[in-house]
Image (cartoon, rainbow, N blue to C red; front, side, top):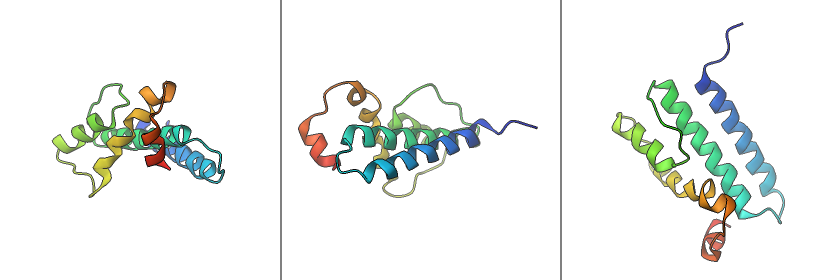
Amino acid sequence: MKPPDPWKVLLEKASQDELAVDRLNSFADSSPEIIGFHLQQAAEKMLKSALGSLRISYRFTHNLGELIHLLETNGHKLPFGLDRLRDLTPYATEWRYDFVPPEEKMRST
């Protein structure tokens, strides 16, 4: 049996992160940091899946803005409003392990 295309695997993994967000949202005490992390991971995997399916090379990064830029510079605009996905980048980088500013916690709830 032929293994699935890597971009299809990424899409399946993104679905798993989306499911984690749905489940975490059902608990009032779920932290915005962990929900934001899984949202960022889902977005990252979906963007990388899109890039892979289009045969656009990308480097190892968690920077959603960079991934969006790659799509756009290769003629693939995201639907209106989805460019805001770049705002999730800190949840996989500095806020994954460091202090989340209170104003960001308030904004994400």
